[in-house]
Image 1 (cartoon, helix red, strand yellow):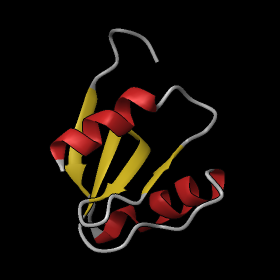
Image 2 (cartoon, one colour):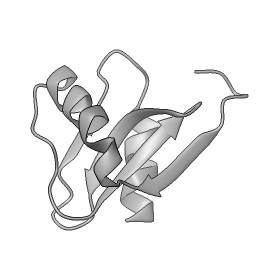
Image 3 (cartoon, one colour):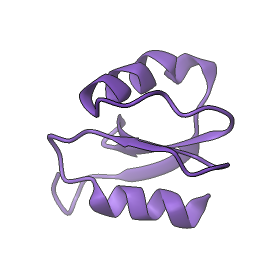
Length: 75
């Protein structure tokens, strides 16, 4: 990620299911349930967080700590 990459925080939809499964597999976690927020960098989902309960998954091969913090603030 560079300083010029766009970051978007948005609510996940059904069309995000495959991306959430991929993130969960990378993070050795499970897909968060309920309303889920996704952090995208350059259009690519890199982290997700359940609004209720705060379960979080993120790509462990990228710098995502700031994205997880943004998701916590947004949700």
